Amino acid sequence: MTMDTIDFGRLYRDHLALATGAAQRTRKTASDWDSRAAGMAARAQRSGYTQDFVARMDLAGAESLLDVGCGPGTIALAVAPRLRRVVGLDYSAAMLEALRAQAAAQGFTHVETLHRAWEDDWSGVPVCDIAVASRATLVDDIAAALAQIDAKARRRVYLTHPVGGHFIDPAIQRVIGRSLTAMPDYIYVVNILHRMGIHPGLSYITQESRLADAPDFDEYARRVAWSLGRLDEQETARLRAWYGRATPAERAGQPMRWAFISWEKEPC
Image (cartoon, rainbow, N blue to C red):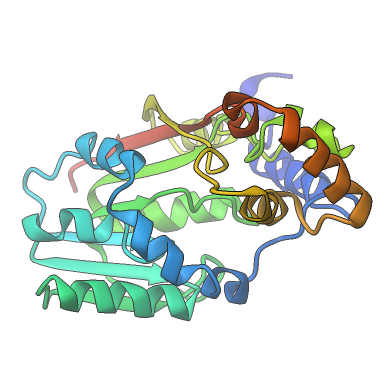
């Protein structure tokens, strides 16, 4: 067996199925993200992650951007002042509403929204100079998604994918008695791109755990449950007992790491 004979797309799908099986996580729906739109919009532009992502983008020669899985416009709005057209695409209607509200508040008239999922028909999605997918690539079929976003970019593509596959430090998972299979790591993305004839740039963004600034136990438990699924009474009791004696650093857990993956499109 050689690298050329390995179907990394199939391996990714098998891994994702294992990580989201009956005893694992609950997959997030559009309505789940709808419920978080307001809070995410308020935090988006203060994020060090956003600043780091945007700092790595090359907008030279670009006039338009497609932001896939745009959420409330975290990346789209950060670069909108430097572009003529910005298109935000998301499967959460509330996230798109938040993006439109933020764009209007900032006086942007060149920001558009498209209500689409990765799995939908993209025939009406415009080709833009730059396409990004920030923290939005844990999809059912990553090989199809990569081909899709590549086809919608004229100049460059930028995306981030988890390193290690855990959104909550495994040490905190063990506190409540769980041990979840990691979600598919970024290395699948790199290998699939290689098979597509794309040799991407790779670097890493470190993001503070979203547990770090939880103001009290109730909010802390809500954030843990968002990532791990509903906590039962025993799990909540274990978490509360540990929370009371843990240090702030222990409560925060390890920071989240993202692989920043980028590539230039070949001239037509």
